[in-house]
Image (cartoon, rainbow, N blue to C red; front, side, top):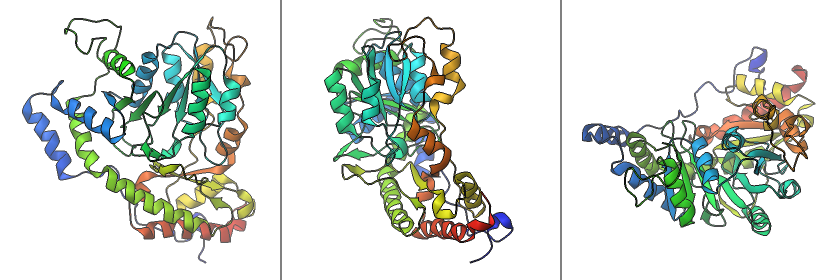
Length: 408
Protein backbone atom coordinates (compact mmCIF):
# COMPACT_ATOMS: atom_id res chain seq x y z
CA UNK A 1 0.00 0.00 0.00
CA UNK A 2 1.21 3.53 -0.78
CA UNK A 3 3.17 5.72 1.59
CA UNK A 4 1.17 7.58 4.25
CA UNK A 5 0.28 11.19 3.51
CA UNK A 6 1.69 12.29 6.87
CA UNK A 7 5.11 11.08 5.75
CA UNK A 8 4.90 12.58 2.28
CA UNK A 9 2.70 10.19 0.32
CA UNK A 10 -0.57 10.80 -1.53
CA UNK A 11 -3.67 11.03 0.68
CA UNK A 12 -6.37 8.39 0.39
CA UNK A 13 -8.92 11.08 -0.38
CA UNK A 14 -8.76 14.61 -1.75
CA UNK A 15 -12.46 15.21 -2.37
CA UNK A 16 -14.34 17.07 0.36
CA UNK A 17 -17.09 15.42 2.33
CA UNK A 18 -20.60 16.93 2.03
CA UNK A 19 -20.76 20.48 3.31
CA UNK A 20 -23.10 21.63 6.07
CA UNK A 21 -25.67 23.13 6.20
CA UNK A 22 -27.58 21.88 3.19
CA UNK A 23 -29.31 24.98 1.82
CA UNK A 24 -32.39 24.65 -0.38
CA UNK A 25 -34.54 27.09 -2.38
CA UNK A 26 -37.25 26.50 0.24
CA UNK A 27 -34.94 27.92 2.91
CA UNK A 28 -34.38 31.07 0.88
CA UNK A 29 -38.09 31.40 0.16
CA UNK A 30 -39.17 31.18 3.80
CA UNK A 31 -36.62 33.77 4.89
CA UNK A 32 -37.86 36.15 2.21
CA UNK A 33 -41.43 35.39 3.25
CA UNK A 34 -40.72 36.45 6.84
CA UNK A 35 -38.70 39.46 5.66
CA UNK A 36 -41.39 40.73 3.35
CA UNK A 37 -44.19 40.09 5.84
CA UNK A 38 -42.81 42.77 8.15
CA UNK A 39 -43.86 40.51 11.05
CA UNK A 40 -40.53 39.58 12.60
CA UNK A 41 -41.75 39.18 16.18
CA UNK A 42 -44.26 36.75 17.74
CA UNK A 43 -46.01 36.06 14.44
CA UNK A 44 -46.97 32.63 13.10
CA UNK A 45 -43.65 30.89 12.36
CA UNK A 46 -42.62 30.33 15.98
CA UNK A 47 -46.02 28.95 16.96
CA UNK A 48 -46.08 26.70 13.89
CA UNK A 49 -42.61 25.39 14.59
CA UNK A 50 -43.36 24.74 18.26
CA UNK A 51 -46.34 22.63 17.28
CA UNK A 52 -44.53 20.81 14.48
CA UNK A 53 -41.31 19.99 16.31
CA UNK A 54 -43.02 18.91 19.53
CA UNK A 55 -45.20 16.53 17.52
CA UNK A 56 -42.18 15.28 15.55
CA UNK A 57 -40.42 14.41 18.82
CA UNK A 58 -43.55 12.70 20.22
CA UNK A 59 -44.04 15.38 22.89
CA UNK A 60 -47.33 16.98 23.90
CA UNK A 61 -45.82 20.42 24.54
CA UNK A 62 -42.91 22.41 23.15
CA UNK A 63 -41.35 25.82 23.75
CA UNK A 64 -38.87 27.32 21.26
CA UNK A 65 -36.04 29.31 22.85
CA UNK A 66 -32.96 31.19 21.75
CA UNK A 67 -30.38 28.39 22.09
CA UNK A 68 -29.71 24.99 23.60
CA UNK A 69 -27.97 26.32 26.72
CA UNK A 70 -30.98 28.49 27.51
CA UNK A 71 -33.22 25.46 26.93
CA UNK A 72 -31.38 23.64 29.73
CA UNK A 73 -31.60 26.67 32.02
CA UNK A 74 -35.34 27.03 31.38
CA UNK A 75 -35.88 23.30 32.04
CA UNK A 76 -34.00 23.55 35.34
CA UNK A 77 -35.91 26.64 36.40
CA UNK A 78 -39.16 24.95 35.38
CA UNK A 79 -38.54 22.26 38.02
CA UNK A 80 -37.90 25.06 40.56
CA UNK A 81 -34.24 24.19 41.09
CA UNK A 82 -33.06 25.97 44.24
CA UNK A 83 -29.66 27.39 45.12
CA UNK A 84 -27.42 24.56 46.30
CA UNK A 85 -29.49 21.77 44.77
CA UNK A 86 -27.42 19.06 43.10
CA UNK A 87 -27.92 17.88 39.52
CA UNK A 88 -26.13 14.79 38.22
CA UNK A 89 -24.60 15.19 34.76
CA UNK A 90 -22.24 13.09 32.65
CA UNK A 91 -18.58 14.05 32.65
CA UNK A 92 -18.52 13.36 28.89
CA UNK A 93 -20.58 16.12 27.29
CA UNK A 94 -20.49 19.73 26.10
CA UNK A 95 -20.00 22.25 28.89
CA UNK A 96 -23.56 23.64 28.64
CA UNK A 97 -24.98 20.50 30.28
CA UNK A 98 -23.15 21.36 33.50
CA UNK A 99 -22.73 25.15 33.20
CA UNK A 100 -26.51 25.56 32.91
CA UNK A 101 -26.83 23.97 36.35
CA UNK A 102 -24.30 26.37 37.85
CA UNK A 103 -25.89 29.37 36.13
CA UNK A 104 -29.24 28.79 37.85
CA UNK A 105 -27.64 28.26 41.26
CA UNK A 106 -27.27 24.49 41.33
CA UNK A 107 -24.21 22.31 41.83
CA UNK A 108 -23.26 20.00 38.94
CA UNK A 109 -22.26 16.51 40.12
CA UNK A 110 -20.31 14.54 37.54
CA UNK A 111 -20.98 10.85 36.95
CA UNK A 112 -19.05 8.40 34.80
CA UNK A 113 -20.21 6.86 31.53
CA UNK A 114 -20.57 3.31 30.27
CA UNK A 115 -17.50 2.18 28.31
CA UNK A 116 -19.54 0.71 25.48
CA UNK A 117 -22.00 3.57 25.01
CA UNK A 118 -20.28 6.79 26.21
CA UNK A 119 -23.60 7.64 27.89
CA UNK A 120 -24.38 8.03 31.60
CA UNK A 121 -23.69 4.94 33.69
CA UNK A 122 -26.74 4.28 35.89
CA UNK A 123 -24.59 2.74 38.64
CA UNK A 124 -22.38 5.83 38.74
CA UNK A 125 -25.49 8.03 38.84
CA UNK A 126 -27.01 6.09 41.73
CA UNK A 127 -23.78 6.34 43.72
CA UNK A 128 -23.89 10.14 43.33
CA UNK A 129 -27.45 10.68 44.59
CA UNK A 130 -27.79 12.56 47.89
CA UNK A 131 -30.61 14.20 49.81
CA UNK A 132 -30.00 17.39 47.79
CA UNK A 133 -30.20 15.74 44.34
CA UNK A 134 -33.06 17.26 42.35
CA UNK A 135 -32.44 16.00 38.83
CA UNK A 136 -30.44 13.82 36.46
CA UNK A 137 -29.53 15.22 33.05
CA UNK A 138 -29.13 12.33 30.63
CA UNK A 139 -27.23 13.40 27.51
CA UNK A 140 -27.88 11.46 24.31
CA UNK A 141 -24.24 11.71 23.27
CA UNK A 142 -23.61 11.65 19.51
CA UNK A 143 -27.35 11.19 18.95
CA UNK A 144 -27.41 7.81 20.70
CA UNK A 145 -30.19 7.61 23.32
CA UNK A 146 -29.00 7.04 26.87
CA UNK A 147 -30.44 4.15 28.90
CA UNK A 148 -33.79 5.80 29.60
CA UNK A 149 -35.18 2.63 31.19
CA UNK A 150 -32.56 2.47 33.93
CA UNK A 151 -32.25 6.23 34.41
CA UNK A 152 -36.02 6.67 34.44
CA UNK A 153 -36.37 3.96 37.09
CA UNK A 154 -33.69 5.65 39.20
CA UNK A 155 -35.42 9.02 38.92
CA UNK A 156 -38.79 7.57 39.90
CA UNK A 157 -37.40 5.60 42.83
CA UNK A 158 -35.56 8.61 44.25
CA UNK A 159 -38.36 11.05 43.37
CA UNK A 160 -36.12 13.29 41.29
CA UNK A 161 -36.51 14.71 37.78
CA UNK A 162 -35.06 13.23 34.61
CA UNK A 163 -34.10 15.79 31.96
CA UNK A 164 -33.01 14.60 28.51
CA UNK A 165 -30.28 16.72 26.94
CA UNK A 166 -31.16 15.91 23.33
CA UNK A 167 -29.01 18.61 21.73
CA UNK A 168 -27.45 16.00 19.43
CA UNK A 169 -30.47 13.71 19.12
CA UNK A 170 -33.06 15.16 16.72
CA UNK A 171 -35.19 12.24 15.45
CA UNK A 172 -33.49 9.72 17.76
CA UNK A 173 -35.86 7.15 19.23
CA UNK A 174 -35.87 4.78 22.21
CA UNK A 175 -38.07 1.68 21.92
CA UNK A 176 -40.03 3.28 19.09
CA UNK A 177 -40.63 6.65 20.76
CA UNK A 178 -38.59 9.73 19.90
CA UNK A 179 -36.53 11.20 22.72
CA UNK A 180 -37.27 14.47 24.50
CA UNK A 181 -40.40 13.77 26.53
CA UNK A 182 -39.66 10.25 27.78
CA UNK A 183 -38.17 11.95 30.83
CA UNK A 184 -39.87 14.84 32.61
CA UNK A 185 -38.36 17.40 30.23
CA UNK A 186 -36.13 17.40 27.17
CA UNK A 187 -33.97 20.04 25.54
CA UNK A 188 -32.66 20.49 22.00
CA UNK A 189 -30.19 22.74 20.20
CA UNK A 190 -30.35 24.10 16.66
CA UNK A 191 -26.81 25.48 16.68
CA UNK A 192 -24.93 25.43 13.39
CA UNK A 193 -23.41 21.95 13.71
CA UNK A 194 -26.64 20.23 14.72
CA UNK A 195 -28.65 17.86 12.54
CA UNK A 196 -31.47 20.42 12.53
CA UNK A 197 -29.82 23.80 12.13
CA UNK A 198 -30.78 27.46 12.16
CA UNK A 199 -27.41 28.83 13.24
CA UNK A 200 -28.74 29.13 16.79
CA UNK A 201 -31.93 28.15 18.59
CA UNK A 202 -33.20 25.73 21.20
CA UNK A 203 -36.28 23.87 22.35
CA UNK A 204 -37.89 22.46 25.50
CA UNK A 205 -40.18 19.42 25.30
CA UNK A 206 -42.41 17.80 27.91
CA UNK A 207 -45.65 15.90 28.39
CA UNK A 208 -46.32 17.71 31.66
CA UNK A 209 -48.67 20.69 31.21
CA UNK A 210 -47.53 22.38 34.43
CA UNK A 211 -43.87 22.20 33.43
CA UNK A 212 -44.72 23.36 29.92
CA UNK A 213 -46.56 26.42 31.23
CA UNK A 214 -43.68 27.26 33.56
CA UNK A 215 -41.17 26.89 30.71
CA UNK A 216 -43.30 29.12 28.46
CA UNK A 217 -43.54 31.77 31.16
CA UNK A 218 -39.83 31.62 32.02
CA UNK A 219 -38.82 32.08 28.38
CA UNK A 220 -41.24 34.97 27.81
CA UNK A 221 -40.40 37.51 30.52
CA UNK A 222 -42.40 35.65 33.17
CA UNK A 223 -45.75 36.22 31.45
CA UNK A 224 -48.69 33.86 31.94
CA UNK A 225 -49.82 31.91 28.85
CA UNK A 226 -53.36 33.23 29.25
CA UNK A 227 -52.47 36.48 31.00
CA UNK A 228 -52.21 40.09 29.95
CA UNK A 229 -49.09 41.46 28.21
CA UNK A 230 -47.96 43.33 31.32
CA UNK A 231 -48.82 40.54 33.76
CA UNK A 232 -45.78 38.68 35.12
CA UNK A 233 -46.43 35.94 37.69
CA UNK A 234 -42.84 34.64 37.41
CA UNK A 235 -39.43 36.23 37.07
CA UNK A 236 -38.37 35.14 33.60
CA UNK A 237 -36.02 36.15 30.82
CA UNK A 238 -36.51 37.03 27.19
CA UNK A 239 -35.34 33.79 25.65
CA UNK A 240 -37.71 33.74 22.67
CA UNK A 241 -36.77 32.33 19.29
CA UNK A 242 -37.04 34.74 16.35
CA UNK A 243 -39.40 34.39 13.40
CA UNK A 244 -36.55 34.09 10.87
CA UNK A 245 -35.01 31.14 12.71
CA UNK A 246 -38.39 29.48 13.22
CA UNK A 247 -39.18 29.80 9.53
CA UNK A 248 -35.80 28.36 8.59
CA UNK A 249 -36.29 25.46 11.01
CA UNK A 250 -39.70 24.67 9.53
CA UNK A 251 -38.07 24.52 6.12
CA UNK A 252 -35.08 22.46 7.31
CA UNK A 253 -37.42 19.99 9.03
CA UNK A 254 -38.60 18.97 5.57
CA UNK A 255 -35.19 17.34 5.01
CA UNK A 256 -34.60 15.88 8.46
CA UNK A 257 -36.15 12.44 8.04
CA UNK A 258 -34.42 11.77 4.71
CA UNK A 259 -31.08 12.99 6.09
CA UNK A 260 -31.52 10.83 9.20
CA UNK A 261 -32.20 7.79 7.02
CA UNK A 262 -29.07 8.45 4.94
CA UNK A 263 -26.92 8.92 8.04
CA UNK A 264 -28.32 5.67 9.41
CA UNK A 265 -27.50 3.71 6.26
CA UNK A 266 -23.98 5.06 6.04
CA UNK A 267 -23.34 4.58 9.77
CA UNK A 268 -24.49 0.96 9.52
CA UNK A 269 -22.22 0.38 6.52
CA UNK A 270 -19.26 2.00 8.27
CA UNK A 271 -19.84 -0.21 11.31
CA UNK A 272 -19.73 -3.31 9.10
CA UNK A 273 -16.58 -2.11 7.33
CA UNK A 274 -14.81 -1.28 10.59
CA UNK A 275 -15.70 -4.73 11.89
CA UNK A 276 -13.00 -6.20 9.70
CA UNK A 277 -10.22 -4.00 11.10
CA UNK A 278 -8.49 -4.93 14.35
CA UNK A 279 -8.13 -2.01 16.74
CA UNK A 280 -11.15 0.04 15.68
CA UNK A 281 -14.83 -0.51 16.47
CA UNK A 282 -18.12 1.28 16.91
CA UNK A 283 -20.06 1.75 20.13
CA UNK A 284 -22.03 -1.24 21.39
CA UNK A 285 -25.38 -2.03 19.72
CA UNK A 286 -28.61 -1.81 21.73
CA UNK A 287 -31.89 -3.11 20.32
CA UNK A 288 -33.83 -0.56 22.39
CA UNK A 289 -32.35 2.21 20.23
CA UNK A 290 -34.75 2.22 17.31
CA UNK A 291 -33.29 5.37 15.73
CA UNK A 292 -29.75 6.70 16.27
CA UNK A 293 -29.49 10.33 15.18
CA UNK A 294 -25.77 9.92 14.33
CA UNK A 295 -24.85 13.51 15.09
CA UNK A 296 -21.41 11.98 15.48
CA UNK A 297 -19.98 8.67 14.44
CA UNK A 298 -17.58 7.71 17.23
CA UNK A 299 -14.81 5.23 16.51
CA UNK A 300 -13.33 3.40 19.49
CA UNK A 301 -9.59 3.19 18.87
CA UNK A 302 -7.26 0.65 20.48
CA UNK A 303 -3.57 1.31 20.07
CA UNK A 304 -2.66 -2.40 20.34
CA UNK A 305 -4.30 -2.98 16.94
CA UNK A 306 -1.90 -0.43 15.43
CA UNK A 307 1.36 -1.54 16.98
CA UNK A 308 1.00 0.79 19.95
CA UNK A 309 0.40 3.92 17.85
CA UNK A 310 -1.21 6.53 20.10
CA UNK A 311 -4.74 7.70 19.42
CA UNK A 312 -3.59 11.28 18.84
CA UNK A 313 -0.94 10.17 16.34
CA UNK A 314 -3.59 8.04 14.61
CA UNK A 315 -5.90 11.06 14.35
CA UNK A 316 -3.11 13.18 12.86
CA UNK A 317 -2.41 10.51 10.24
CA UNK A 318 -6.10 10.05 9.43
CA UNK A 319 -6.56 13.78 8.95
CA UNK A 320 -3.66 13.83 6.50
CA UNK A 321 -5.31 11.01 4.57
CA UNK A 322 -8.22 13.38 3.87
CA UNK A 323 -10.54 12.15 6.64
CA UNK A 324 -11.56 15.01 8.99
CA UNK A 325 -11.70 13.76 12.58
CA UNK A 326 -11.02 14.82 16.15
CA UNK A 327 -10.60 13.48 19.67
CA UNK A 328 -13.70 15.22 20.99
CA UNK A 329 -14.33 16.17 24.61
CA UNK A 330 -12.04 16.24 27.59
CA UNK A 331 -13.31 15.34 31.09
CA UNK A 332 -15.69 18.17 31.85
CA UNK A 333 -14.81 18.44 35.52
CA UNK A 334 -11.31 19.51 34.49
CA UNK A 335 -12.60 22.76 33.01
CA UNK A 336 -11.38 25.72 35.07
CA UNK A 337 -14.86 27.24 34.86
CA UNK A 338 -16.22 25.04 37.66
CA UNK A 339 -13.27 25.62 39.97
CA UNK A 340 -13.62 29.36 39.40
CA UNK A 341 -17.40 29.34 39.87
CA UNK A 342 -17.30 27.64 43.26
CA UNK A 343 -13.96 28.70 44.73
CA UNK A 344 -15.49 31.46 46.86
CA UNK A 345 -18.88 29.87 47.41
CA UNK A 346 -20.53 29.44 50.77
CA UNK A 347 -22.55 26.50 49.43
CA UNK A 348 -22.15 23.16 51.14
CA UNK A 349 -22.62 20.06 49.00
CA UNK A 350 -23.67 16.73 50.55
CA UNK A 351 -21.96 14.95 47.65
CA UNK A 352 -18.63 16.68 48.33
CA UNK A 353 -19.26 16.73 52.10
CA UNK A 354 -18.38 20.40 52.05
CA UNK A 355 -17.59 23.00 49.41
CA UNK A 356 -17.68 21.75 45.81
CA UNK A 357 -14.15 20.69 44.88
CA UNK A 358 -13.81 19.46 41.33
CA UNK A 359 -10.12 18.68 41.73
CA UNK A 360 -11.30 15.63 43.69
CA UNK A 361 -13.45 14.29 40.85
CA UNK A 362 -12.23 11.41 38.69
CA UNK A 363 -14.37 9.36 36.31
CA UNK A 364 -12.12 6.53 35.10
CA UNK A 365 -14.04 5.64 31.96
CA UNK A 366 -14.22 9.26 30.83
CA UNK A 367 -10.51 9.73 31.54
CA UNK A 368 -9.65 6.71 29.37
CA UNK A 369 -12.06 7.60 26.56
CA UNK A 370 -10.77 11.15 26.32
CA UNK A 371 -7.09 10.27 26.59
CA UNK A 372 -6.78 7.27 24.31
CA UNK A 373 -9.94 5.95 22.66
CA UNK A 374 -12.52 8.30 21.09
CA UNK A 375 -12.24 9.40 17.45
CA UNK A 376 -15.07 11.60 16.17
CA UNK A 377 -16.48 11.88 12.66
CA UNK A 378 -19.13 14.58 12.16
CA UNK A 379 -22.68 14.01 10.92
CA UNK A 380 -22.20 15.68 7.53
CA UNK A 381 -19.64 12.99 6.65
CA UNK A 382 -22.52 10.50 6.68
CA UNK A 383 -24.56 12.39 4.08
CA UNK A 384 -22.57 11.37 1.01
CA UNK A 385 -22.40 8.18 -1.08
CA UNK A 386 -21.40 4.79 0.29
CA UNK A 387 -17.94 5.14 -1.25
CA UNK A 388 -17.19 7.83 1.32
CA UNK A 389 -17.44 5.14 4.02
CA UNK A 390 -15.10 2.95 2.03
CA UNK A 391 -12.60 5.82 1.80
CA UNK A 392 -12.65 6.12 5.58
CA UNK A 393 -11.90 2.43 6.04
CA UNK A 394 -9.27 2.44 3.28
CA UNK A 395 -7.48 5.26 5.06
CA UNK A 396 -7.60 3.40 8.39
CA UNK A 397 -6.25 0.21 6.82
CA UNK A 398 -3.45 2.22 5.20
CA UNK A 399 -2.46 3.69 8.56
CA UNK A 400 -2.56 0.26 10.17
CA UNK A 401 -0.24 -1.18 7.51
CA UNK A 402 2.29 1.65 7.99
CA UNK A 403 1.81 2.23 11.73
CA UNK A 404 5.35 1.09 12.46
CA UNK A 405 6.71 4.03 10.45
CA UNK A 406 5.02 6.62 12.69
CA UNK A 407 6.44 5.91 16.11
CA UNK A 408 4.16 6.49 19.08
